[in-house]
Image 1 (cartoon, rainbow, N blue to C red):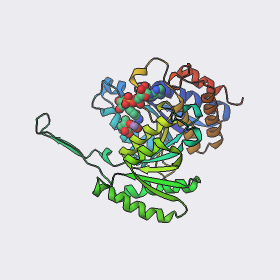
Image 2 (image 1 turned 120 degrees about the vertical axis):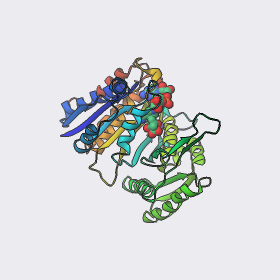
Image 3 (image 1 turned 45 degrees about the vertical axis):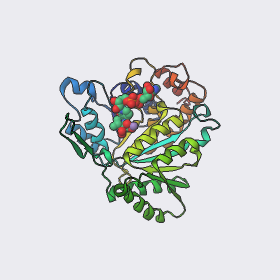
Length: 354
Ligand code: NAD
Ligand code: IPM
Ligand code: MN
């Protein structure tokens, strides 16, 4: 029995997560996958109601008992300081040391690729985003706040251990998955101290993987090349902030934020809880319209099946999602006319009876 914590979160989070839960429940009922779904009331509503963000006992239970967390999105205009979101999101990414944020960028249909002359076969790579340090580490502060002499600082934290393990994880993934090339991206021309460390580590680790073509691109050039010719990329490894930015760009290449999925995990501890999240946020403008695209969340469920060892279910689900998208059975962001729920119905209708 696998226990899965379910956190809808804010905005469209609960709407898309409800669809993920329907699919999880379908596989439990029809394919005999033993799942214990644990629904958690966490997010902005809860925070505004009673001040709770991410209680220690919940955090411990997730760590001790759960195989996975399925999280919608966090972010609500009524909590401008982002307190609850930081505690929950970083509480899991940092707190469980899930240092690899793996974001596959793959177009499900030719029609989703926005670049002239490009098709789905040109958009198929995986970003390994460092997930526990960098500018996200929260080291910094403000001095003389609100005065003309104000100083605002966030430090970019790069540790030898942190850089080495994410670079190695990217190469190991490439080797295991028959990917030929790893690009490391940094800004070592401007950030001499912090990112020269990435250069040195990359030069060392690549020697352990002589069969992999190891390449470097500065982050600005990477953004340029991703749009110019995405087909040259297999695996990209980069720091926390650049990984965040470049995976929104990647989402645009694969059809939009409505279809971009991710998992955060610790490759040295495959038994540890894994965090599955769509790349998108709480999309406040879409709340309650029934137009939020559930595909990113459904692809997270497919990733979850894959990571938890249910390979057949992962393939069945991903095949059904792709077929629905190719058939144009989508929400308006992909030029379709179905509702959030209607898209999931179209996916479920494609499963073999069981
Ligand atoms: P966003 O991802 O919520 O929205 C960006 C654009 O993509 C909007 O036009 C939105 O309508 C569209 N979009 C997003 N998800 C979609 C979906 N499933 N279907 C169709 N269209 C979709 O980013 P934002 O507007 O910058 O941020 C809104 C809030 O979400 C902020 O509070 C931000 O901090 C938060 N956020 C949270 C996460 C997370 O929890 N992992 C990720 C990104 C942003
Ligand atoms: C993401 C989001 C988060 C991040 C925000 C909400 C802090 O943009 O998961 O991509 O920057 O990691
Ligand atoms: Mn992001």
